[in-house]
Image (tube, rainbow, N blue to C red):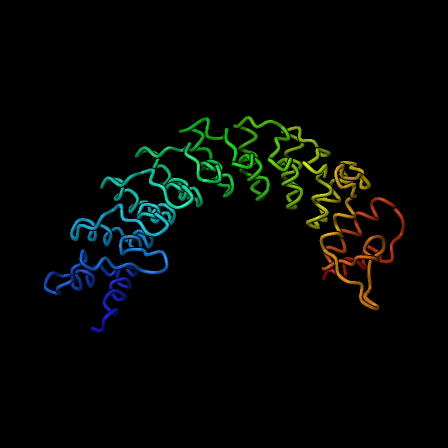
Length: 346
């Protein structure tokens, strides 16, 4: 067998879970010394153990550890161990095997992520339970200041969040290095069920602000999650006119991201003044809608009225955001009817 072919073949057998063939390849008669040749794979230098754990082959993992004596704490260049791999991919049998063999439950990979944190990036309740029952600490934080509850809030799995609150009741009371709470994160990512659970079981202050002065309500509006914005208004007494560090309100932030439905909700249903200016920059929502999406005015390029006639908008969606802001404010007729604007978006 050509040099270099043997390691590749072993890797393929591990990934495919071909334990019978793997035993034959690694039989003592074949003169394979894994200790003398600690094969590493890929840019990060993963081992066969990493791959067995990642692909969820418990029998292969058992063979590599118990028969060949491979170290379960082996790590790659990101300091990721086999337990990280098994936990992140949701392989409960592999996780349980490694823990029973004494794997460090709170080992840290690059950026200070524990196996429990990685398990919380997916709907891995059984894996999460196994880690917690073996002593994993739900309150540890990674380099960005996120604990496992914060990570689970981003994914929006209510079952995982309920379990974490049951085993660690204060895990909700956390914020990242930039002062963002799990409520900010769930609202930004549109996780309605998670937001409802957080409002029901946790005790976040209304309109808590991150380092930029952004509130969960602003996050919901800026990302077009109107139902979550309504939930925050009804159940959390959120303020629709709260300002960020630059004095911009939710309306201004919705204009930047061209959230048509959110703009209409704020102006038409909540009565937010469309001509309100951000205190620091003195810009209206119409300015925000246009300023980040400028195009040179080219010859006979058709532009919408107002600021768009000078600036232009990159997409029909941006044009509609500008049109909404200006038409809601002036209540005057525009060059294009609503039907025409809708047609331009198709």
